[in-house]
Amino acid sequence: MASGSSSERLCLAPSPAAVLDQVSTNVCISIAAERSTTRGSATREVQETPLMHEVRSFSGGAFGGVCLALAGNPLDLVKTNQQAQHCGAGKVMASVLRHEGLRGFWRGAGTCALGNIPVFGMVYWSHDLSRRLVARASGNTRGPASVGEVALAGSLVAFPVSLVWTPFELVKNKLQIQGTRVAAGHPAKYK
Image (cartoon, rainbow, N blue to C red; front, side, top):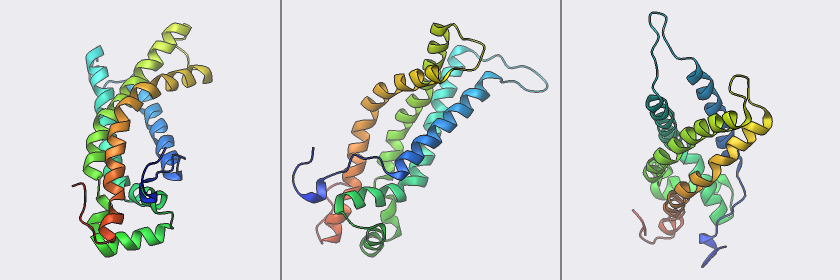
């Protein structure tokens, strides 16, 4: 799983931040799906074409992913460095502040934001699509989805999103972990 020095090892167990991120993503997906079923204004009804619906699903996810990257990067950076350095959050935060300043907490945020555009766009779009496909296959196009239907729709999202997410996550982690190199007096390997 890991190669080289202990500073390059990553723990694959989900962190509390990752679990919270997944829960908030699922809540946002559910809210967006509920809102997408009844669109219109008080003065006139807007007929949404299928393409408009798909673009809206993707765009909402992409925008949410960028916001998540910018707001959540400091916590993600601390978590990633805790896993690599095997030390507490306070020590990681002090090291980042001392060696890189406040700006250091957003190391890797640009890559993360760029990666979140296709990833979260795909998550929202594919979740919306898979919910419709599962509902159509089960014959349940009017009522609320069952727990099994929701679970199946969610599992259909995982594989294609993992293919897109993994390369961006690797680059982001390498950018975040290089703070240990900077703290040790070495130049940054990745910019």
